Length: 357
Ligand SMILES: *Cc1c(COP(=O)(O)O)cnc(C)c1O
Image 1 (cartoon, rainbow, N blue to C red):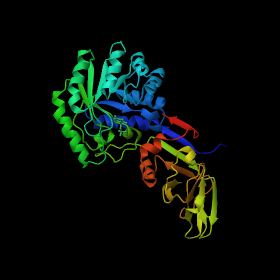
Image 2 (cartoon, helix red, strand yellow):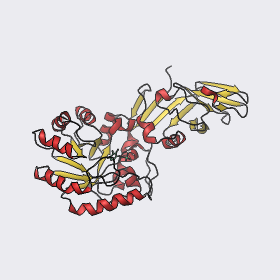
Image 3 (tube, rainbow, N blue to C red):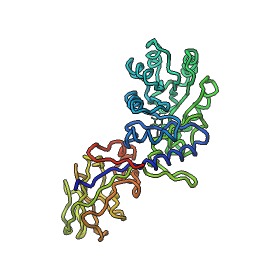
Image 4 (cartoon, rainbow, N blue to C red):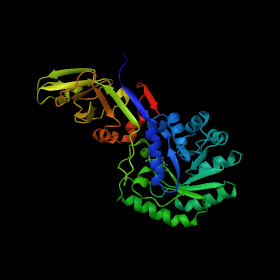
């Protein structure tokens, strides 16, 4: 019998979440973010499942867009970081990919390629995140230039720096700049909201929304109303060994966890070599056959240890969930000083995955 550690990807939950995003977005078109291997869930199976429910797929780089086209995806594909070089510009036209342009040198790359410009181009406006994007005052002329060159669908877009905190001051500044710019633009459409913008209803109404994390059921907060988002990834295993240790004995590398009472420790064959975070503190929740038990001791490359003293039914073979349908990934992330996005996207290939329709 192989190691029982597996990753299950629930594609019907993914589709359900996309329908929920669609309904929260009102009439807006949905550009689903599937960058970074669909947030670690598998680029191609997830994109195939989403294609039926959304209006387009967003990836970070051309290579990801080409992979999707080669897999037969026909929906619009948006390249969020736009072209890096002339080879990327070539790939845009060859594979019918729509770029986001964030700086003048990218438009020059497109113009110097000699071919027709893509029929759809997004222009990124830096409203206050200050990572990428044209300064607001550069945007009207940039869009006018694209329209003059025959681009038929120009989308003005911006990204929230702190959408998860509804009272963040940076959001006010971003919205103010966006609202004063919008009337000057000849764009055909606009796009502001990511998942947090949609969930917190922060963004102005736009023709396109760009949800990512909510599609995978790992948003920072629940939705208002009756709709629920279901976790798509379940990371699971089973207890491989159990031992009783007297108080005063330590468990695992560095002796970080010390038994304060006679304790039962379950060892589980999953570790940072699979993507379970080494930064997880003692007490990080682990689902053990229906109960939440605390992680006890440092995460090893191939194993973790869990204090199951208060879970007397636990035995070798008891099912374990690291995160997923019973335990939100964000709870584990918080206990490991990170965010669900990071845990999901850095799963390793060692763990077998199964995609369930
Ligand atoms: C990743 C990304 C999104 C999706 O963000 P979520 O927080 O996952 O909803 C939207 N827009 C841009 C520009 C992105 O890079």
